[in-house]
Length: 269
Image (tube, rainbow, N blue to C red; front, side, top):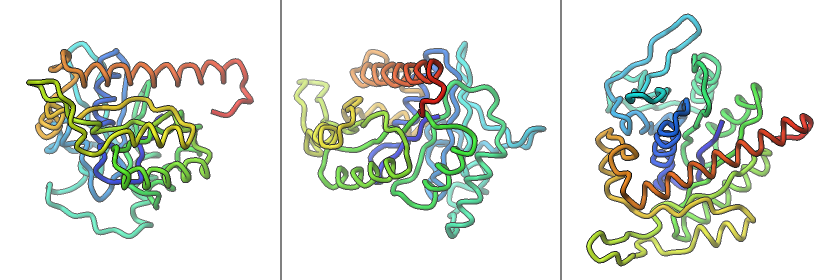
């Protein structure tokens, strides 16, 4: 179980969640995505599921599935599946949002999963506290992936998220620097649109591993807007190579932690 977090909005948490899930699926793993961004759910659109809705099964809500030939389904749960239309606004106070998140954790029939990715809204507020407390009632999460962009304003917000994770005893798997420059497809020159080096500086300052720097790739935005599978279509791109290496790195870190816990049951994740 992995949280995808950032103190800043618009840094690409949902995009990272989507591409990480597709990359894990590409490896033949069973993946679920829980979208707890109650007021701004975007995962369903990224998978082309805008018109889908959840159904009630024997063991609870049945997630909507993203199917791909010869690969395990990705199972997705989001408030968007419960709304009447794409323009419906969620105007809820904290307690009602908390109740919905707890219902997602308790009443969804995920089936057998290798990984559950939890896409969170920006900040360190009610939704984050609810999901952390709710998950810890079942098991220790595998950790948190923090997403930032290179500029200082994003770095400042992510530093607050690091404080939140440490106060909540959440293991931080590492930092992803998203939108780390744009490489021209014609001349290969890299333009640092959002400054540069912020993720690396933050990682060194907080003594956290920088997992990857993902460049701006227009094809990823195109695929997310249209619900198209970037991982399947653009395996010759530099962004795909980085995402694939990132996925392997995260998978290896979690497997190593699980192995250590198996050898020492008293060890905390």
